[in-house]
Image 1 (cartoon, rainbow, N blue to C red):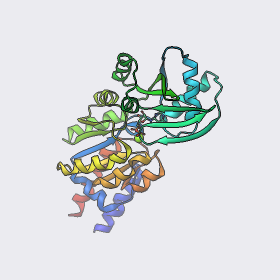
Image 2: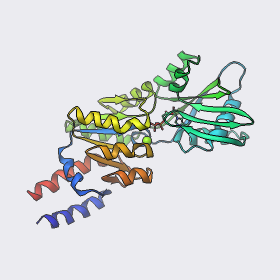
Image 3: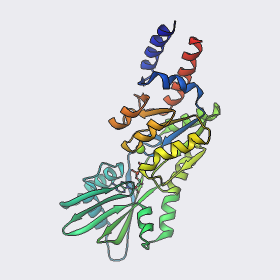
Image 4: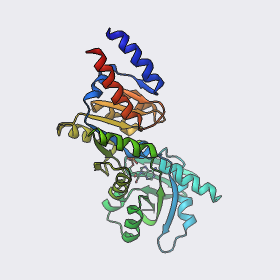
Length: 290
Ligand code: ADP
Ligand code: MG
């Protein structure tokens, strides 16, 4: 009877918007007791908007935004879209990029009008012992805003704060998991304070922040070694190795192709609540088979 059950569950899963790519791992979903979520784009919409620009002495808000947006034109990070959109809304003239590269997990670097330009994370600025208005930074981060810094020729010129939106469905997903005694974990490259703020909004049990892209899979491996039977949910290129490492890899449908190719299940509707549906479906399917 097994093949029939599988056929039926395949059509049910398709209706629910679950694309099952690895049947064996999907069946194992009934044994999961922890779910790891990537933050940006998975728990949040990944649509950033600029909320605050804080220039250092001698710089203007619009200059900070124009330099940053000029460089961000070449980046595909959701932060980049937020900064470029904000500059466009203000009709700012963007400059031509002469050189560009990304600094994995830390930001971007390039050359514009002969100047070295960086838009980088708080981690990068701290690693280089640069001084800034720490109080203002903490205040922004504590309200869940992601702060990036503009450097011109290695001089700090200002900070740009951006807000993303928590997905309402993510809140419901975490609440449902809690009801079933399933541990929820957040994994993010973003700052600790921002991560804590989002986790607090959602009721997430455990937070791993400031994780470099290459370290995401390693973190999942460690969580497994702690004894959890763990699913990883993500959307980005960065998430692919972590999806492959988890007992069950779940990709958000609206995410990157790379993430979907590494996943066991794809949430076609990009709804984090479908993580709970898929665990329930796996339980039901298994019950019918034994
Ligand atoms: P996540 O996907 O969780 O945001 P990333 O590893 O992509 O993690 O990024 C980590 C951090 O690096 C971001 O929070 C940001 O501070 C910085 N960063 C990455 N890309 C950019 C970019 N294009 N512009 C500015 N900052 C960036
Ligand atoms: Mg992401």
